[in-house]
Length: 345
Image (cartoon, rainbow, N blue to C red; front, side):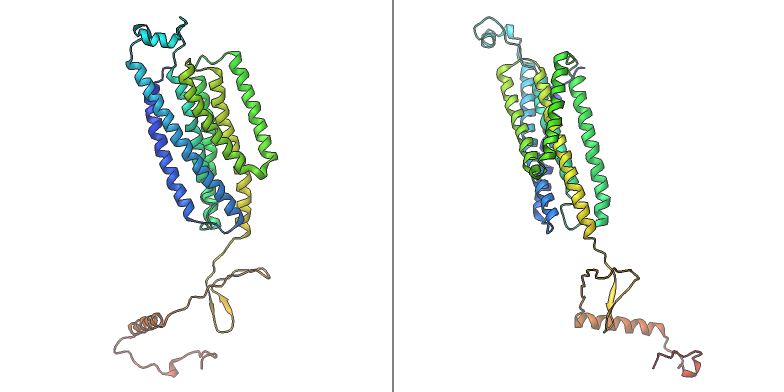
């Protein structure tokens, strides 16, 4: 399958810069609101960490994609090596053996790791955003939670499908036994990492995001190293790419399973229902029927009317009362009452 890596690199560089801008904007929003509950504070820490790491991955990936586009563009415009004696001597190192030329697909593969990491982190952060704020009530959270979790699951599935497509279709020669063995090793490492997260759930925050930052750093170092080593894409590059993406997915899915149930349980436990009521001088009366459990905790909000506001309401009531009767309205005597109200004095 022929792929224009130059055009892809340029477009993905712009995409990552845009996603990084969105991450910074959401991070600013998150830092502007707080959370009083303990669960909300934990969610907020995960949310801030996800946005910070996503921003790092975005701009690191954008830099790598720009370098990839620049390299491919230069390679296309430059003459063949055999027409450049000085360049040929540099590649051979004086040994007479030409070093295999560096190919754009290898650079793109390593740079593309940060695309997957950044997108997964952003969607993970958006899933946590409604739950990390105390400004959302339970009904709002239920509706938004279903949508955000569905989007997160869809993105995780899409990442795996696109990852397989990128590796096995764009690079069709990766089908030998050594590649399969490397992929099996990657899967074993994924299982071991998932088990470690489960056993060390108390340290989920540092383990998750230190790992993701480390993967971003290793991808940058590997990217820089390819300019020295040259050669085309090898099984180690593919294995690292798959490992970095799958470890990121496993870490964030594990964090989701840890965080979501606790927050929803806390929201249900502190559900607040607003009822209209008034005080008749002796007790508070509800404006609508509602069954309260014994010893139920209530929050009473008193709305005090200012004198000016009370006068305005009085004038408004008198004006409506005058409109109910005409100017030539006859006098109504008590004899016209068919059934008297015994409570009326």
